[in-house]
Image 1 (cartoon, helix red, strand yellow):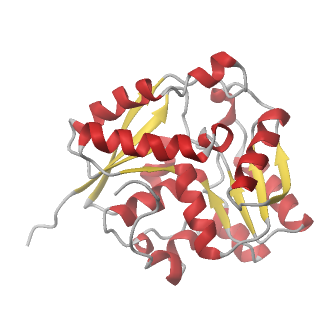
Image 2 (cartoon, one colour; image 1 turned 180 degrees about the horizontal axis):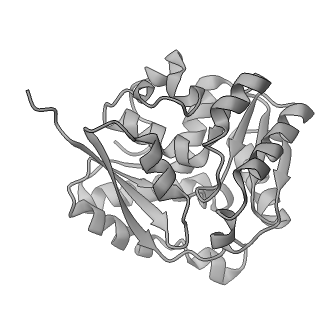
Image 3 (spheres, one colour; image 1 turned 90 degrees about the horizontal axis):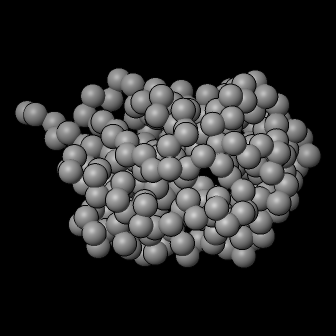
Length: 256
């Protein structure tokens, strides 16, 4: 019997270089799931008018409509902008993508909200490459959603391309620092940062779950398409935890 091919669609910042190879690496060996990407212009992360305008829905929707041509089963905004723009931005975006394409939609940030609600994590350690003002905005926006970032590390970078240039070992060091300072779980918040690779080893050593943005987005897409996340091996407890791996249903409030 032929297994139905599941196609995952990812909306990707144009200057990202980590997201695509890491996502494909996580899916290695899973022949019935493929991932397809569509880019739109994102070159910097800042709170300036020009930087915020990069995330105008019209640009994202054009990229989503191109993914729809590939007849993907889900379209995910694989980016973290709603963390400083407001979770409602991603809720509306999901609604608009589904209205325009007829395809269910997911986003990184809404998946994080669902994930932390399921785990009941009260003290989040936040790791990002962003500047201080962006980090403070994220902490405030996440806090308004009941996601409390009690300890944080950031690298004060603005050029989106530069985020992927941060060595995996440096990302691992930041994760270790927030865990030692005290948190229930770590969010590596950026889809152009290398936090997925060391997650499993760090979880085993530190005893705290590490949730990388690229991995969280894939997790949400697998659940949305009925694929068991536990098929992803070697990338941390996000995929193998029995509660999270078997959790059905949607990872958004507003899109189906």
